Image (cartoon, rainbow, N blue to C red; front, top):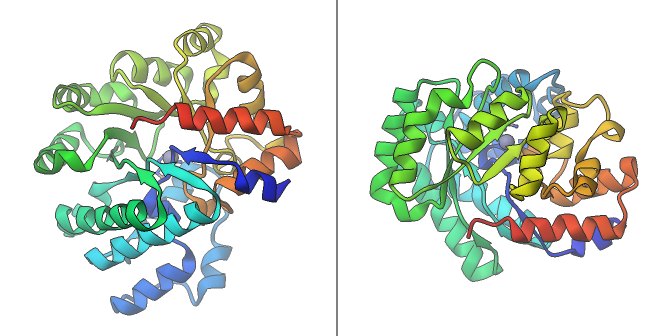
Length: 315
Ligand SMILES: Nc1ncnc2[nH]cnc12
Ligand SMILES: [Zn+2]
């Protein structure tokens, strides 16, 4: 089944480039940039990938991203991810990047963007993988800081297909970012947002009504609200679900409890994605495979999930 799932043509719509930083590359970049790491080796670092919630993961994820310094680093990160796409027949990807994670450390916005963009271009030319980059605001920071990030992005507007919202969800509702999303949309950006990963259905309502998002990232807690479920089904709003992420971050205690196939059968446009594959134990195929192993996902269901990912592309 793994090989069959791997060969299925699919799109990935929820992937943080910084979350695709494998420990081996992290150590190589630390050496190249002469950065001392608090972990003895790759195995020790991998051993630290045990999380009780989103915040515990984010603390390590931001620490790991510190090794990314130069345009070449961002190129290498993105190129390594695209090679994984090629190996798993991901024919289209819409990755996120978090500019504030880097600009707050003094890395110029253009350094980050140029490295990523060159790799995405080479991915199109050399690997035949189409892509569209999503600029994601960090929700644990202020709306003013998001506005400044949007200012920095506007001179490069053709480099992005959308804006998103990620990082610590609880206590940082979508309403906090209504004005910056209004401005981004008026500048022609499509909007997406993480909502209903750890946060309540109310955050999904806000993301839809206040931020006017076209796709919900995660959204698994929508199932707690019948009226919300009906809206998502009626309007066929895609959900970018990340099964291994949800179990690694204890949104579900075990994969056998995941609700993605229930949602699929109820008519929700759910898709399968890897979120932060270096930290959560696998790329898209491993996510599909876990659904087969623990939930009995059939080939027909896998085909529908893959088709949903192709249908839910923004570009
Ligand atoms: N799963 C996730 N949720 C929120 N922010 C993130 N940033 C990277 N991965 C994330
Ligand atoms: Zn995510």
